[in-house]
Image 1 (cartoon, helix red, strand yellow):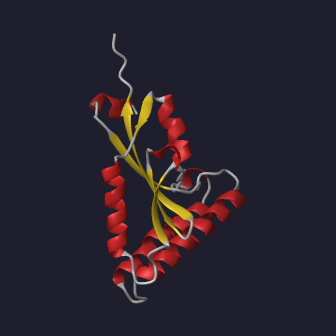
Image 2 (cartoon, rainbow, N blue to C red; image 1 turned 30 degrees about the horizontal axis):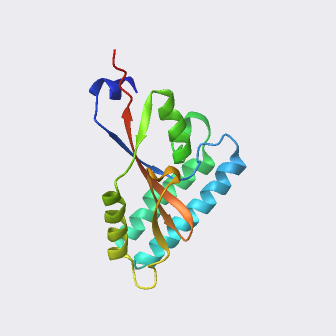
Length: 159
């Protein structure tokens, strides 16, 4: 965080998986992974043909390796440690950062992109919503939150 603060960015944009894959309890990690990746794989099935190279890459590289790491690894060996937006809010607050509201234009642009790529019959299954406080955006599939996008800035104290 010191390095990021030393750069003095106007804003820091964070996109994160909306699941808690960082729990020390195996059962919690397993259940969270089951719900998250079930929704993720269901979405890829709706958008890609079975033999599509992109689908195979998403399923094997992103999903497969992540699931293996989250479920089968412990300690330093486990490198996939996603946490949801609420955890990032607490983390950034500790470092004097404040959440910046994503503009209405960002929200409408995201909804337009989702609308334009939605496969036939999937229009209501993939969603973009504003998160609590209307500051960040959350992408979901069939009611399961998949990814969030939030913006942050350092609170400058004038002396």
